[in-house]
Image (cartoon, rainbow, N blue to C red):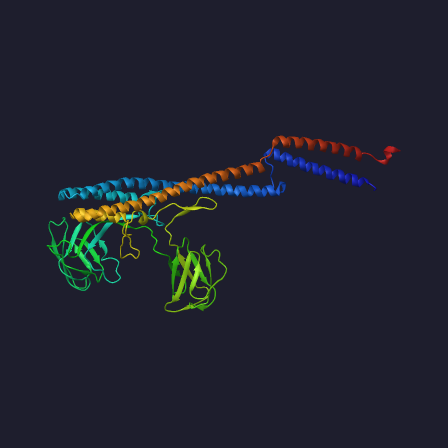
Length: 497
C-alpha cells in the first residue's frame, strides 16, 4: 500500500481534531460538573434525566396538592371532634329533659341552652379552609348551612305522591310555634280553622285557612302546606288525636348535593334526554349520523369538554352507554336526531378531588348532608330531611318538643339524636381514613422522589477525579500526536540526499 504525504497530513489532522474534541468535552464536563451538557453527549442518559426531572416536577406539585388535602381533612377532623363534644352535651341535655320530674320552666331553660348548642354546631358545619367551605360539596364558595325554620307534623294524611305535608316554612321565630287544626278538611280545597301558640301553649290565636289556600299564617311566619293534605281537628280529651304542626328551628343546607346527573341539550330540544349512573366527570355526547331515537344511533363521547373524542359507538336503540352510566334518549315533541347534536351530562359528584400521586386522587371535602343532615331542596320549593340519622333535624325537633313542653317527643328525640351522632361519627371515620391514606401516599411519593433524584444525580453528576485522569491522558496523547506529526511533516526526500 502506497502512503502519500497527503494521507499523512489528513490522518494527523483527523486524529488531532478528534483529540481536541474529546479534550474540549472533558474540559466542559469538569467546568459544569455534569456528564451531559448536550443530548449528543449521552442520548440514553439524556432521556433518563428528562424523564426523572419531569417526574420530580410532578411530584413537587403532588406534594403541594397533598399538603392542601391534609389541611382540608385535618381541619374537618378537628371540627368534627369539636362538634362531637357539643353533641355530647346536647344528648346529656336530652337525657335530663326526658326526666318526667322536670318543670316547664326547667325545660324552657334547657331549650335556651339547646338553641345555643344548635347554633354552635351550625357554625362548625360552616367551617372554611382558606375561604372555602369544607362541608358544602362542590359549592364551596359560600356557607353550607343557614339557620331557618322547619316543621314537625303529626296526624296529617298526605296527598297522593306527596313527600311531606309541609313544603317549607318562611319567616323568623325565636320560639317554637304550636299549630293545631280545630276543623277537618283538605288543604287547598276546604276552608279549615286552626289555632296557633307562640308561648308554648299558654295562649292561642284562632285563624282560618281559606278555601283554595295552602299557607298558614302565624304572626309573620308562613307555613306552606302540600295541596291535597288531609287534616283533622284536635280533641281536648285526646292529645294524640288531630293534626298538629310544630314550627321549630332547622338547619337549611345551601351547599351542593347529589341531585342526580343533569342533561343539557345544546341543539336538539325536541328529544328528551335523561342520564342514569354515577358520573364523576361531565360527559359530552355527540350524534354522528342523522337518525331517530328508535335507533340505530351512532355517537361518540368526550370526557374532557370536547378536546378529544372516543371512537364512534353504536346503539340499537336510544340507550347510549357512556363513562359512568347511560344516556337515555326518548321522543319528546320530536324523535329526530341530527348529526352534530350534542348532549352534556353534568357530573353529579359533590367531591372536590386533587391528584396526590401518579395514580391517585383524593376527595378533600365532604357533603354536609352526609355529615350533619338538615333540610334540603333539590327543586327550590319542597324541603326534605335526609331521613334516619339526620342530626340537625333531630336537634331541631328536640328543641321544638322542649319549647312546646312535649314530654313524649323529648323522649323520642333522644333516640334520634343518638342515630344522628352515629352518622356524624361515621363521617369522621371516613375523613380519618382519608388522612391515613394521605400519609401512606406521602411516604410513597417521598421514596419515589428520592429514587428519581438519585437517578438524575448518578446519570448527570460528573466524577471529577475520573475526568481529571481522562483529561491528563488525552492531553498527553494529543501532545505526543502533535509532536510526532510535526516531526514527520518536516521530512522530505531532500533530507536523504
